[in-house]
Length: 187
Image (cartoon, rainbow, N blue to C red; front, side, top):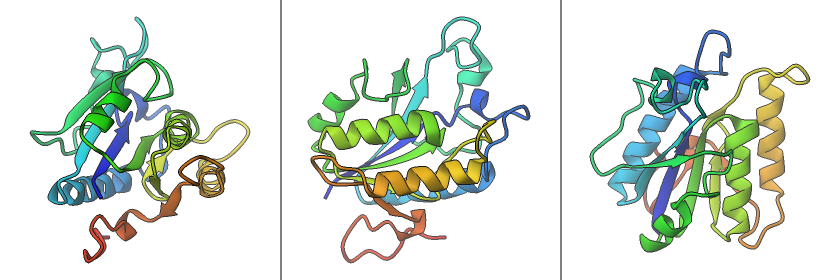
């Protein structure tokens, strides 16, 4: 089965002292390990980057648009740019995945309650079997809910989501199996 790892909005503008994310450095470590495993299994690693409007910290001309410096990007990885919470809307993501015969998605990144959630729902609606590592996405505290509860809530919703390819599979990054006989990805 051919996998694609989507790494959503792991951009400098999303990871600031004003908006700290839950376990950001641990997440980057886990995503780097998972990306290496996907590459070894001949899957695709796709970095989704948000293009904000002028004045937004994610505007392509500003430093906040760049990926986090500790995130490992390799030759052969792909970048897809988006302008909304949905990585599929108005982008070539679906066509790219289908042209590479991707059979399963692994959706990760930031923020759990915005772009990750919207992309997971969109992937499931497009009939992609989808894995969401429960420790593969992050967010910040919101005025109405702490970050831990946001993440817990979304993991529960995705695991019970009614969609053509079924609900998302929820597991730890280290529990994802890319090849039936392969051991866990690490940590």
